[in-house]
Length: 267
Image 1 (tube, rainbow, N blue to C red):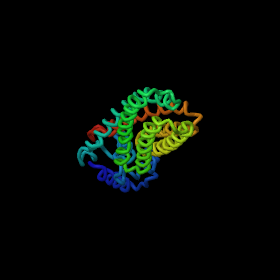
Image 2 (tube, rainbow, N blue to C red):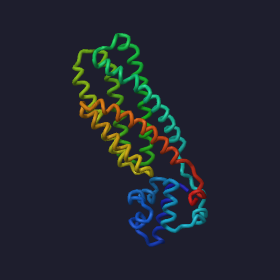
Image 3 (cartoon, rainbow, N blue to C red):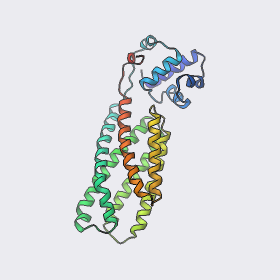
Image 4 (tube, helix red, strand yellow):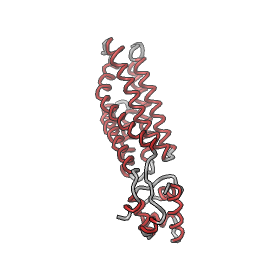
């Protein structure tokens, strides 16, 4: 059963019981917005969510089995994007341990000519590609879930990230600019973007709401620390934790959307 059909069926069963969405919420511990999105066919609930709805509506497993097996799955395109995003994210995370010290060294004017014109630009280009692919995975998820706020936030992050990496390559190799001012502008703008991304993740309607809520808070903390400039050192630690959590979230989302036979929901 596809998302629209499942949502329609749940709505029919709820109305047949004479229940409002609010009454259903009280019986299965979901929020009203989640029920609305399921019934509208906007999202595909996970197995334990369907089980909770079945119990709340007093629907027998046999009633579901009369319909057919249901697919709680990802499209092949989105599945491939998540895999690519995860691999790129791991590469981006590892490169960060090389990139950040080099950024600090270049900002302090301590980079040699070989670093300026060889290693550093090459590293930055690889970081640009890997980080963009990493963040685009979340943009694809947001598009699939029809979450405009999440989509806009990660699109902003992709654009902002590309802009500042290119600025790093060109301006840090010129040397004829105010490096403290550059650091303030870069950290301030990226910090605001991370606050935006964190807020979008916090508001993301998903069935791992607690995890994504905590993930969003960590993103906002990261952004606030970067925006303050003086808290940038703490921001680096927060960003490390945030990026690891983003990788974990990809795995959780992927597993949560695997195809599961309907007969397993009642067990």
